Image 1 (cartoon, rainbow, N blue to C red):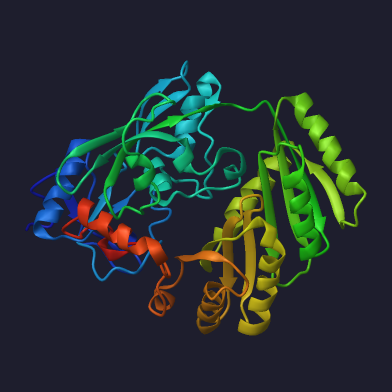
Image 2 (cartoon, rainbow, N blue to C red; image 1 turned 180 degrees about the horizontal axis):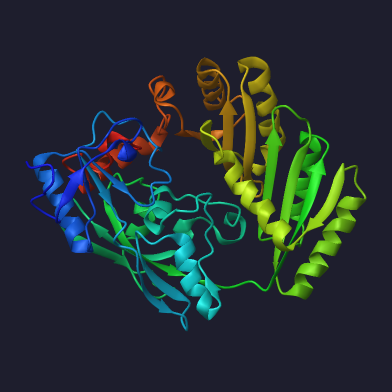
Length: 416
């Protein structure tokens, strides 16, 4: 086949080093201009057996296993519209290639927003849904999966399939949208999505508590979660080379409600042995939370995603010190303290990083769902980035066969 054309879905171009995925350069890159063209591309790729990868903003393109080869890279860059904003119903329909920042700029004209946050400035709606990636807003609003009420998919059978609806209280049929969210492009391509929205918040302040050590941080987290306070985010930052732990408690609501709750929190923690308690707002607050979600990705260090029970927070903090002491790996944890989910950035020798991941997966301490998101290809060659799928492996592989019988989607990068 001529590398500059494709028999379906329009013209392509040869892949370049800038398109590489874990140092593997795709043979072709296509940018379909419609959902129908995208479906046709996938059907043709399945017919001739082309390992295919989907790309939105490319911010998470290095997540997953290292592919053996990529014959076709499909960009959703041309599918970038806010198709509809039904502000009276707090609903928006958005194409997969639209950037989250651009979408929220459009929604802001009617005082609304899509309450999803991403660590990546160029993240697209399709990429966010495909990875179900979330940030501090998860505490109040849940993950992107929880904001989704409808989705349109392009399948390897060449069809466009719609699931869900365009109203919030739509519960008819199988929830295909929630199934496809977090599938990492291994089943089908998201072409557009329908979301429930939220009104923009009037005021915001963050109480920052620097706890002297892990046990005090764990007790502080438990105290906040058991209280009547209603923070929008409860986040934590801990490092393997220092005993203190930073706890960030953000309130966003009306100005009076925010001020009242912040006053209570400051008074409550001011009576403890915390090393410091201060209040951050305005530009300083925005910079604080931007750093909270982006610092873990600020270098090319290895990054893992993991989960834990909030009640086990102290043992998670202890694990960071254990990793540095026994494996020689510097570790930084940034996560959602109230839900027990976050990221650990590791720096050090590759052999030590691999041992640290194996230690976490072995349950010392109890940390679940340890998935390697960013790592050098050499490290990916020494372990499975996804780890054991456990009891869900059989049904997940059955879904893979049903959606992608040719096995071309995501070029074997996982999770199935």
